[in-house]
Length: 180
Picture 1 (cartoon, rainbow, N blue to C red):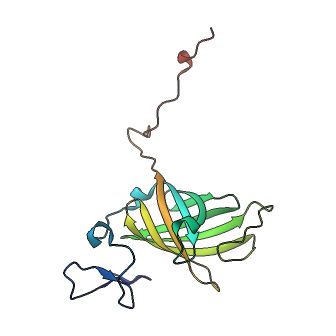
Picture 2: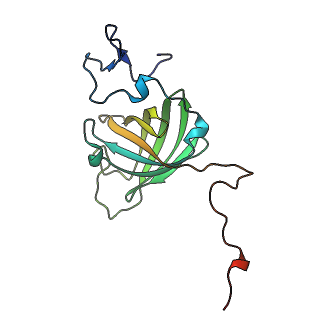
Picture 3: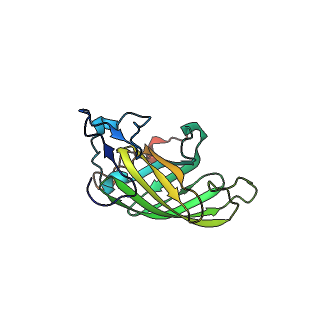
């Protein structure tokens, strides 16, 4: 592992397959992705629409909650039915770091934040690693609260090509409509 990270990668020296271990020497619940080889991803690869989910560590994916974010050039924005998310991000290797300002926009929704509070606005830091080019897993941190699990799954990617035409079909021209 190169550089410092809030996550540590352990491997058993006596295992030929190099299966990673958790800090206490226990095998992880999931097999290593792509043979345990880190994925190659660039900042440009992150552009697009992502599902951003939060939950307690150890919870099933179905027990997480969250919303959708659009990741652009160093910025991300999105939300869910109760909260809006706005932040900045950086990518170093496979490590994604983001700072988020999270604001409640739905005052009629009594749902607490992932941290259990009912504040209207708070700040959180995220750190996640690319598991595949379409999946990041990590944690969201807020001072004074336990860390929570974070996952990001790619939903859609806006690919710019041919001067910005993208992959979307062209809108119908006015000549394609008739007034019969």
